[in-house]
Structure formats: C-alpha cells, structure tokens
Amino acid sequence: MTPQADMKTNSLLLKKGFQAFQTGDLKTAEQCCHQVLANNDKIPQAHFLVGLIGLESKNRKLAASAFNTVTQLDPKNTAAWAHLAKIFSELGYTLRADEALQKAESFPTDRPLIQNVIGSVWTMLGEHEKARTWYHRAHEAEPQSATYGVNLANAENFLGDLDGAQATIEQILQNHPDHPQAHWVLSGLKKAVDG
Image 1: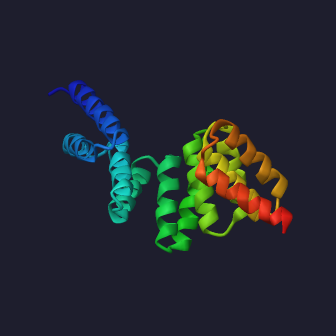
Image 2 (image 1 turned 60 degrees about the vertical axis):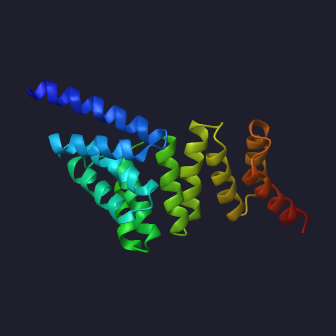
C-alpha cells in the first residue's frame, strides 16, 4: 500500500473509531485504534482515542499511557495534557498533575470541553479561583451547556460569590428546567442566603 493510501485508510479508521466511541461502541473504537496503530504507531489521534477509551472503561493506566504518548508525539496537544493532568490528580500525583496542567495552560485552547477539564483539575487541586476562570471560559463559549454552567456556579459558590452562582444557575434552569444538579446547587444557595 502506498503511503497516501495508508494515510487515507488510517484517516477513515480513525473517523470510524471516534464515531464508535461517541455512540458508546468501545469495542469497535478499540479495533479501529489497533488497526491504525498497527499501520503507524506515530499517529497522535489514535493514541488520543486509546486514552479516551481508557477513561471511559475506567482503565486509568491505559489512559495515562496513551495521553503521555500523545504529548510525546504532539507536545502542543492541550487536550492530552489536560486529560493527563486530570488522571494524575485523581491518582493523587499532585506534582505530576501540576506539571501537566502547566503544559496544558501554556497552549491556548478555545475548546470548552478542554477548558472544563482544566477547571476540574484546578478544583481537585484546591485552586478554586483558577478553576472558576476556566469554567467561566467554557461557559462563555457554550452557555447552553448545563455541565459548564453548574461547574461555574459551584466554583462561584465556593468562592462566596452567591449572587454570581445564583445568576448562573438561573440561566441554566431557563434552558434545562429539570436539571437535577442545577436544582441541587440552587437549593444550597437558598439555604446559604436564608441561613
């Protein structure tokens, strides 16, 4: 097979793998990764998909190894650094999490999902002001997302900005009136204000 044909095959396999992952078909996603990596083990996107599969299947060791490989192949991959920081933080490797987080922050990202991951790592590390900054970016980029809004409201609440938290939650509830986490945060805010 020519290198051009290999690239096209790998591209199609990766597309199929990511689509399978999005629908929860981890087995097909994994098979696609194996085929791509058998053809060329220097494709960062294939390792990234392996990392996502590892996260979804609760195999942090696999996920950490895959995201680490991505950062070696593509040192400016903010998403891989962010996911690696989150895994390290969850495992209690605070210094490694902080190093990975610094790398993630050194490369700009306008992707709300990654901004939210960075915010969640800062939350785990107890840096709530920094977390709020990243949650705010994610929420501004995608204001319809209940997840980003709830995370922002929680950070605002933790930092004592009860009015900001309430405004954020009320905005979420306009678009997601039955969102349980938003109602939970709102009830906690009402207790804080009334109490």
